[in-house]
Amino acid sequence: MEERMIDDEYGRGIKLKKTADGYIDATDELAEETEKQTDAPEASAAEELMFEFPELDEDDEDLVGLSPEEALALRRKKEEEAAKRKAEYEQTCKEGEVLLESGSFKAAELKFEKALELDDEEKEASIGYWRAKTADFTEPDVLVDEYADAGFESLEFDLGYRAVDEIKARYKEVFERRVKELEAEEEPLAAEIENKRTSRRAIIKERIKKAFIWFGVALLPALVTLILGIVFGTKILSTPDGRYVAPTIVFAALFVVFFIGFGIATNKLLNAFRIYRANENVSSTDEGKKLLRLRDCKEIYERFLD
Image 1 (cartoon, rainbow, N blue to C red):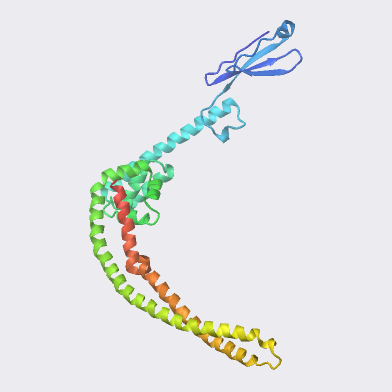
Image 2 (tube, helix red, strand yellow):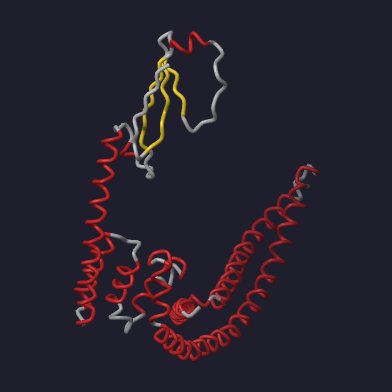
């Protein structure tokens, strides 16, 4: 039996064994040893070869079908490209910082936007971009308004958790000041909205009460005429002289008239309830929408202070 090893610093050995019958038997050298064969003549006639195949740490579909040498060359190429990209990213961030320090916020925004295209997970580019957008957080509402609807979790996801943590620490005083300002703005606005709602609520409740009365007044004769029309209608064929035909027609006609009145009363009652619900919904007015927006922004500022 002849055995050869081809050493490779990147991988492990795969044992290829050529038997006397011309077949190839492959065995991983790290696998458990199999039982030794007892047929000595066949074992002595077999030829064993050892090959080494590289194990790459990365799971890259581009490496599928490549030889070990081609795979290593491709990996080196990607590493060089990554290093070049990282160097360009760092240089772009440095240029953006210079522009920030000089107060050229629009130019800095463009620089950090380019840096984010190179690596959107690095906190330096994310922080720099929003520093530029908010004029170094002298206008923090630019950021908060952007995520007032989506919420703080979406903000954290987009900016990156590490970037948000650093922004929290660096601009804590800015966020505390904005919370106090929004609270001062929220209190009188909320009181004004509640006073208006209370005034409208009294008027609407009186309107609902009247609508209920008219609803009952319209419902009762409609039900009476409907019942009488059905009763007389079922008796039309019970007598040969047709004495119930005229009452049936009269009550049917009266029911149509009362039913129209009942429909009008029902519509007024439903409208009164619709107005009541709208009055209880803060977002139904412009002032209410402003209050809710203010509270959403305040909540994000408070989360920055967590």
